[in-house]
Image (cartoon, rainbow, N blue to C red; front, side, top):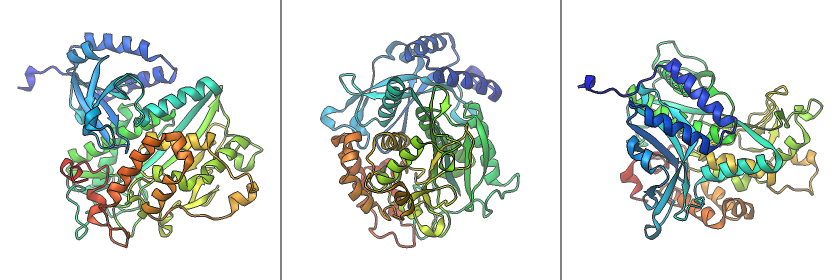
Length: 478
C-alpha cells in the first residue's frame, strides 16, 4: 500500500538547508505578503505535499495544531476560522468564531520520521471576528511589540533559552500519574553522565537531529544535573522566533520520546527531592547590529541601559512571577535547597539570583532571567520580560547599590503569586484588564483543584490538572 503514496520526504541535510534559508528570509524582514506569494506558489507546484499543519497557542501556552488539506488552504488561506469557545480561556460560546491569519515567516519543512511525510508547518496569528488582533493571543502581542520596538526605536531582540526536561519510562505517563507511584526515570546518571547508547542519550541524539533539520542551529546538548534530565541548547534569534522554536522544541521532544515508548515531561518539578527543570531565558537588545547591553567599562561588562532593564525586572518581580511560573507545580521548583533562582536580585556568580549576568564579550553580553519555568507560555513570558525591562516602573527612592544588595524572595506558592498579579496595575496596563482576568481565572481553576499546601510529595492533582497535560477528559472537569 505504501507504494501507492508519493508524499514528500526530504533528507535531513536538505531539510536543514531549506529551513535555514526560510529562517534567514524572516530574519531579513521579508514581508509576510512577499513570503505568502513565494510559498503559495511552492505549495501549488509541489504535488507531494498533502497538508499544511497550522498551529497556535492559547492563553496558557498550550500548543494546538490542525491540518488543512493543501488544496483547500490554497483556496481559503485568507478566510480560515475556528471555534474559540473550545479553547480554554478564549471566547464564550455566544461569540465563538475566531480567525487564523497565516504567518508565512514561520514556514518550515518537517522531518517526516517525526511528523509523517507530506506536511509542512506554519504558525498562525489569531484575529477577532472583525479581523483585529485577538487580545488573548500573546503571539500576536509579542509580534506587534517587536514591530513597534523596531519602527520606533530601531531595537531588535536576541533571545535564547535553556529549556530542561525529564525523560520517563512509558508513554503518556503524565496522564496516568499517581502520587503513590510517581514517575519512573530512564536513567539514574547525573550531569553530563550517560553512556552513548543509554536510552537518555539515544533520545537526546534523535531529538538533536530533528532540531538541526528544523534550523534551530544547535550548540550543545547533554544530560542535566538531575537523573533522567536533559537540556539541548541552540542559537539565539529574535523573540518571536525564539518562542516559536520553544513550542517546537517541546513538541519534538514529546514525539521523539513517544516513538521510543517514553514520555518527555516539562513539569517544573515532577520529582520531589531532586533538581527541577527551568527555562533560563538569555536576552539582549541590539541597535544597528550592535549589542547595546554591552559596555566594557560597565559593571560586569553591562551598559547602563542593561542595568536599568535589570532594575525594572527586579522591581516588578513579584507582579510578573505568575506569568513566568504559571502552575502549582512550578512553585516546588522555587525551593532554595535546589539552587532555585528565587532571590530577587542580580549576580554574576550566584545562581540562586533571579537575574544572572553571564561572563561574556561584546557579541554574547546578555542577562539571564533564571526564574522562568519550562511550562510558561513563551510568548507571554518574553512579552512580559521585554515590556517590564523597557517600560516597567522602578523604585527611584532607593540607590542602585541598595536595590541590588538587599535580598527579597519570589512567592513560594501560586496563591501569593496570584495575589501579586491581581494587585498589579502594571500587569493590567500591558495585558489589558480582560486578558489579565482571563489568565488569573485559569490559574485559580487549576489551583483550586490541587491541595493548598505543597508538602514534600508531588500530588496527583498538580500533575493531572496541569495546563500542559493534554487530557481532554480531565480538562472537562475544570
